[in-house]
Image 1 (cartoon, rainbow, N blue to C red):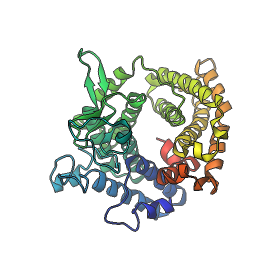
Image 2 (cartoon, rainbow, N blue to C red):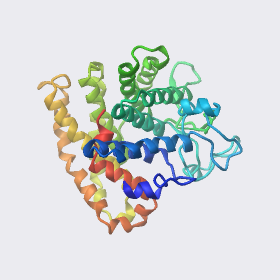
Image 3 (cartoon, rainbow, N blue to C red):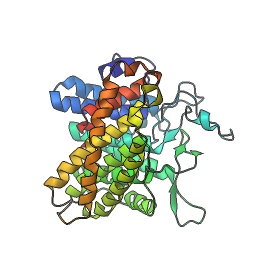
Amino acid sequence: MGEFTVGTGLKPPIVHPQRYLWTDAFAVCNFLELFKQTCDEKYKELALDLVGQVHHTLGRHRSDASRTGWISGLNENDGELHPTSGGLRIGKPLPERLPGEPLNERLEWDQDGQYYHYLTKWVHALNQTGKVTSDPKFILWAVELAKTAHGSFTYFSSTGRQRRMYWKMSIDLKNPLVSSMGQHDPLDGFITYNDVHITALKSFGSSRSLDLTAEIEDMKDICQGLSWTTDDPLGIGGLLFDAFRIAQLISKGCSDLAGILESVLESVLVGLDYYSQGSPLDFPPEYRLAFRELGLSIGLRGALKLLSLTKESSDIIDPEDSLQPLLDALREYLPLAGKIEEFWIDRENQRSASWTEHKEINMVMLATSLVPDGFLMI
C-alpha cells in the first residue's frame, strides 16, 4: 500500500494523480483496516486523502475535456458538499466515446465513462469510511451516489414491464455506452443498497431523501430469474463477497435474504467446479491475470468468515437447513486463496508483464486478500 500511495500520486500529492475508481475503492478499505489494526492515524489520513482525491479527480471532468468543473453540473460550493451526486468517472486513459461514434469493442475497454459496478464499490468504500470515522457525511455521499447510479443505470424495457440495467454510461450519465446488463450488477446493487440503507437509518433516522427502500425493491425485481453462475475467478470472488455480506445482513435482522443466499452459494459452487477443472493456477504468470485471481482469493477469505458466522449464528442457519451441504462443499475450495496469494507475492512472478501492466490494481487487491476485513466486514 505504501508503493501504491507514492506511485499513484496520493502522497506526496501530484497535480494529476493516477486515480482509478475500482482500485481506489479497495485501497480506501485497506487503509481503514490498517488504521484499525495499528491505531496509526496516518492510515486513516491516507484513506480520507484518497476519498478527497477521488472526488476531486473522478467527480470532475477530465483535464482534456471541453467541459470543466463537477460532472454533476453543480457549482463549486455545492459540488464540494455533494461530490458524488453526478456519479464518478472510471478513470480510463482515453476520453469517452462521443455520441454517434461507432462502438469499437477493443477500444471501449480503455475509454472513460461510468461503470455501475465501480460506483457500487465506491458506495461500499464510503459506507466503510463513515463507519470507521463516525462522520455521517460519508454515509450521505454513499446514499447520494447509490441514488444517482440507480436512477441513471436502470430503465424499463420497451414493453414497460421489466426493469433492466445498462453496463456503461457516459460521463454525464445521459447516454448508454454499452447497453447490455452486467451479469452480477443487479445482485451487487441489491446487497449494497441494503447495507448502506441500514447505515443511513442509524446515522440519520427515517429520512425520505435518504431512504433506499424503492431502489432496493427495484433491484430485487431485476434479480428475479437471473443466473449468477460464472467460471470467471473475479466473478466467483464477487459472488462470495456478496454471500458473506448477505449473511452479515441476515445476522443484523434482514431475515428475508436467506433464499438469495442459497441461490448465490449454488452458483458459486458450480462456478468453482468449472474453474478448477482447467487447473488454471498451474499456469505460468504470463497466462494469468493477477487481479482476477485475487478477486477470487478475497472472496474465499470471505467464505472462511461466512463459515464461521453461520456456525455462530442460528439466525442464518440451523442444522437441518438446506444451506448446510452448500457450506460443507465450499470448504474444499478454501485452500485456493493461499495458493493464489503465495504465487503473486513471489517477486519473480511480479516481474511478468501480466503483473506490471496492471500493477496498481494487482498490488491493492493482493493487499486486500492478505488483510481483508476492511473490505469484507460490513
